[in-house]
Amino acid sequence: MTIEQIIFFILVMILGSYTQTVTGFGMGMIVLGFVAQFDLTSITFASVIISLMMLANGSIALKGKIDVIDRPALTYALIGLVPTLILGVFLLTYLSRDFARILQGILGGAIFMGGVFIMLKPEPLKARSGNLSFSVAGATAGVLGGLFSIAGPPLVYQYYRQPFTLENIRLSLLAIFLMMNIGRLIVLGIQGELTLEMLWIGLFCVPAVSFATIAGRRWPPPVSDNTMRRIAFLLLVLIGISLMLTA
Image (cartoon, helix red, strand yellow):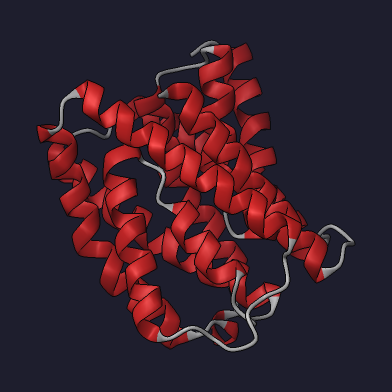
């Protein structure tokens, strides 16, 4: 990457980190979208940097606020996510490219319709969903994460429909994605996929990501809970459109 590309990449990381901090998700979609649009680097390279930056973003955003999280929901979501993430990776190996694209198009359409429907009526459920539903959402997220590197939508949909505070929702999502990316980096390290250039670019991004995360904690958008829920589901709509166009 040239110096100009690195600077632009860091600016995109700032935008992604701030969005991730205030909503609980979005960094991957934003960064990969800009990378693909402006051909900054390969998607594989960028996804590794994103995983590295998730460690900084999640650690800073969660500092001193772990007690806010609904721990049973978090635990059951991870129970569902971990094994199916591995399954999704194996499925990607065996599915043909054409069939995988068909699945991706269907997935994009489902996410798009779900996001539109909930965005129009963002009020949460009256009662918390059962623990099993969090495991199902986690399992679905794991498969999608393994197949398409987009694990967020099922968990975002599940959490933003709960009668939780927005702080609970975003911190829970950040905790799940933090743990997931730790595991992903460990697997990549074992496979020898981490390069020195990735680590150097990641090191350059850390100060900017840390600043954006702190800014997100201290100066979130001055909007109501319902408006923030609409923003979250608007991001889901954009993810759905992106998947359909890619497919």
